[in-house]
Every structure is written in structure tokens, then in C-alpha cells.
Length: 494
Image 1: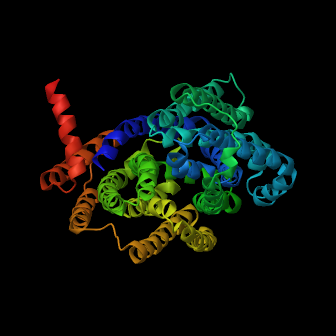
Image 2: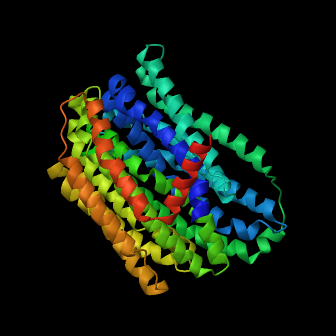
Image 3: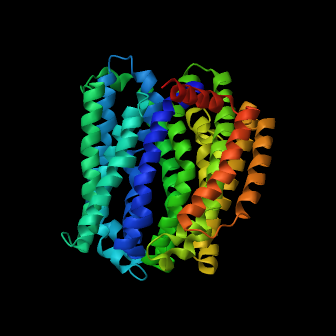
């Protein structure tokens, strides 16, 4: 895990730099110049495009990471690369042909409450294709233990480009009507950059070898991909159903408020994304070598480290959320999203605290068990959103997500304990929980009457700095302590 922490440091730095750029876009630029309707429009079109990705990529994104170590040293490796890219291309061409039938479904969802979304729905088609191949080339880079540059492209460069486009719209040089075409163009530019990087750095070669088709691993690859396709379809539905249902029930403006509020919760999850991108190929290698001891180590340490980091970030976000919403342009449009931040943030902490349970299931021989679990979760998500959104609005969607995430993680926890005899918690987990609760209680009761930005700085320093020192002194996480020691050493040496 220490190696993973070090390797993910560059990715985390890129992610947080991207968050800074994204924060400027989402907290100032987007609210000021395109408002809640524009934010909602961008989010709903993007969510609609993502909805099709699991089917279009046929589950190959995850399968590439799992089977890359097995194909890497084979003579037909280059044929594997061709196969992993050409079949999704064929699936996309079929999708293009079937698009007229799909468009009718979106008309039923959006035409009543979100007319502007339906007017731009045809852009979902090219956006889906672009995101499809972006994900595939990102998977190839991840399989080679390189996640920093693709993450920089996704998290930083894309946000900078979208910010530039919004400035051009605000200045009147480009019409607001081109908002969605510019979204599609921005992702196309990012895809082009990622393809150039991947092909140049890894010098990937593509060829066709008949021995590839005779390999037993190909059948395993296809079988695994089929299950991943179903799992990923459920996963995307779980992630996006609340946004789509809010757009359908409440309209584009409410979807925009939901999107902005959810963005603050993404700050909490950034370390998880970075670490899991590195853990995936490590788990693939561990299961390939039947090294269950290393799997258990990954499980426990990922749980402790991510719970500690996620808990601190959740406290940091929530104790300052009211001041943050004071500095947002058109704050009257977005104030309804305050408690969305709480429930989405809590859901992220729960997910992080359970460690890499999903990744363990995906890369183990019991990966098929994820399918019925996913089915149960989809039903819970749809039912809870249907139940809570009409009564609690966008906060209801956040409550539904929190309930669903908690339930799903409990199911996976019990299953891994039964099948492998492993669980992620320790005495250190309890200590972290107690300290986080104490810091939370202190933080929510600290009030200042200064400018909101000063309030955020003072409150964060008073709460988070002592908490970090306590964690460091108690040596709760050896990995985090080692990382801090190396950073301090570099600072003082310089």
C-alpha cells in the first residue's frame, strides 16, 4: 500500500489541481454566466451519454485492466489490442443505427419538464462515441500503471477548456445556443490528446494473429466482459438515475442545483479515485498469483486510509458549506442544494470507509456475485428516488443515494466476509471514527462574523490542523505518516 500511496500522489495532485479549476468553473464561472439552467443542461446531456457507455464498451474497460497481465507476454498481444478497440467501435456503429428509437425514450423523459434538454438530445450520440474511446484508451494507460497524465487530461485540461468556452459565451463571441456543441468539442480534443499520448508513450502496435482467437483466455475475457457490461450498466444507472429523475420530475434548473451541490462532494472522493486506479492492476496481479494475503492487506489499508482522508475532507466541506454558498454568484438559485452536499458527502465517506470491496469482487473468481447485488441496488435507487424526490426535492435524491450506498456496501461486506474471511476494520477504524465525530461536533459549533472566505480559512485551520496532528502523533496510518515524513523531509532539505 505504501507504493500505491506514492504512485497515487501525482494523480491526487493532478486531481486536486483539477478540482481547483473545477471549483472556479462550478462555483463562479458557470453559476454567473450560464446559471442553474445551463449547468443542468450540461449535466443532463453528459449523464445521458454516460448511460450508454457500459453497453458500447462491452465491459472492455475493466476487462483490459484484469486481463492485461495475462495477454502482455503473449505473442498475440497486439491482436488483443485490436480486439479491445474494434469491437466497441462496431457496437457504437450499431448504436448510431438504433439512435432514432432511443431518442423517443428521451422525449418521454424530458419533454415535459426539461424541454431544452430534449432540444439538444441529438448531441448525446457523438458524445457517447467520444467518451467510449476516451475510456478505452484510459484503461490501456491504467493497465500500464500510468494514471497521472490521463487524469490530468480528464480533470484539468478538459475543465480549463470548458472554462474558456464559457468565457467566450459570456463575452458574446459565441452564442449560448452552442453550449452543448462546445461540450462535445471539448471532449473530442481531450480524446485526441489521450490517444496521441498513449500511442507515443507505450508504443502500442496493432496486428492480427489467428492464435489469439484460439486462446482460452479470449473466452474468459469475453465472459468476464459480459458480466462487467451488466454490472457497469447498473453502476452508471445508480450514479445517474438521481440526476435524470430530478431533471424529469423537477426540471433543468433543479438538475443544475443538484449538479453544483454534488460537485462539492466530489472533493471528498478524489483520493479514492486516485488510489483505486492504482489498486485495480495490483489486485489483478494478486488474484492472478493467488496472493490472498496481499488482497487482504489492500482491503484493510485502503479502508483505513480512505476513511481517515474522506472523513477529514467531509468535515472540511460541511463545516464551511454555508459560507461557500454565500460566495456563489446567483446564490439564491442554488441555496436549496446545501443539504444535498451533506448527504452526498456522507455517502462518499461510507463508500471510502468500506475500502476496495468492489474491486476485490470484480477481480476475484466470485465476480458474478456482483450482478444480483447490483440488481438489488438498482431497485433500491429507483424506489428511493421515486419516493423521496417528490417530497424532499433534490435533497430527497441525495438521501436516496446515501441509503443506497450504505445498503450496497453492507451487502458486499457480508459477502466478502463469508467467501474470503476478510473484513476491512480494526481498532484504528474505531479511533478514527471517534476523532472524526469529535472534530465534526466542534466544527459545526464554530461561528465567525467575517467575510465568508476568512470564515472558511479560520474555521478550517482551527478544526482540521489539530485533527491532522493528532492522527500523525497517534500513528493511526503508517502509510500516511510515511508520506507526510517524506514530504516534510523534502521541504526541510530544500
